[in-house]
Image (cartoon, rainbow, N blue to C red; front, top):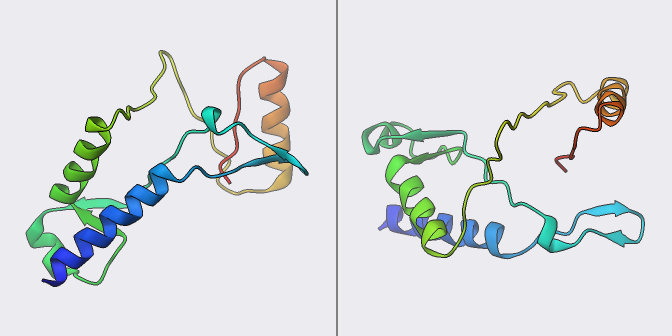
Length: 118
């Protein structure tokens, strides 16, 4: 019973994340076009049913079956992953403004696209 509740709540949460567009503010008063936004789903790890039973209260991990169910829902409802040819991602993990600014300037100089994760 508890497992069904957790799976149900996880499914509702996933639907809210995917179906409710997040508004990103490019500048004060400016709103990005929702058609240009990409929802990002983050998973800390996938576990087998047996592994999940060892850590039932750890919501950072889901079972492989739950993950597959979520991906099946997305695929059946017209969602797809975005993986362009020759794509790379560069992330400044230390979040220092100097490092991030220098990186942004280098990308601009080379005419490479960039985005921020808010």
